[in-house]
Length: 276
Image (cartoon, rainbow, N blue to C red; front, side, top):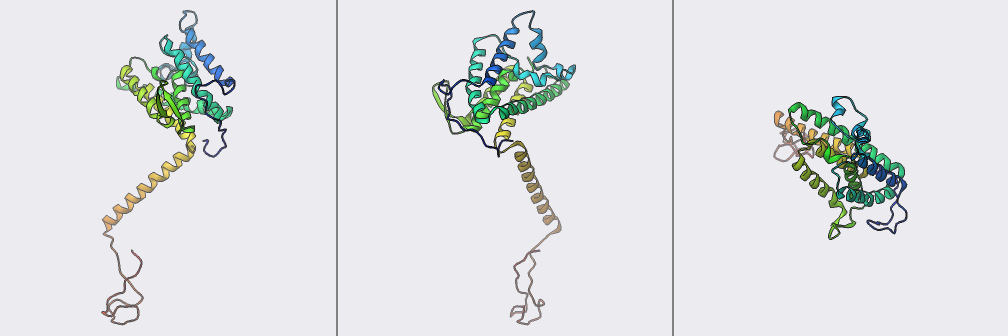
């Protein structure tokens, strides 16, 4: 989606405060996540985040608005890890915002999060029909977690050769962060059996990658053409085998007339450059 549009390439300032004030839109997102997360701790206010977060009520009772609101409702257990997640979200989100610009930044969030939400809901509905019962549906992709997947993937696409110190110690190129976050999501899936959440995270990562690596429609068209190419090759090979096609030799003269014109001295046909 953004493969042909100009982008703002600012120097990478990951984890430093020397890049100017943070984007206002990102601050609003972080504040919203913190407020909705805090509302869970109180009896009188926990109903609002419960109505806005992604739950099986989307397919059970038609709470379809949750597909649009869940990225902005802080999720997870009450612990210091939530603040660390917000800090990671800020570090990656700041550079992604400055790379894409305001309009493309929000377009990326809306398309990736909404697509991930729809796919996750379909997986959860299918799992319920199959009799599966995860410990908590959509836990792996709730709120800041799906935004982290989107921002980290976008950063890896925009600054793929940048070196980031994982856990502030281990130097890792940014392009490997996509595989790392998929691995972490899989480890979370092993602990929670949250298949819908895991598939949702993978969908958000794939959608973000598609939008930032030549455009979604361009990648889909390229994939369709490649599949058509393989299908035609397979069909042609099957037809050759079925009909027993072979190379036919030919020339200007009649085969076997013994003349030198258009034929060989032995009376046989002259080999032509074509194949039937």
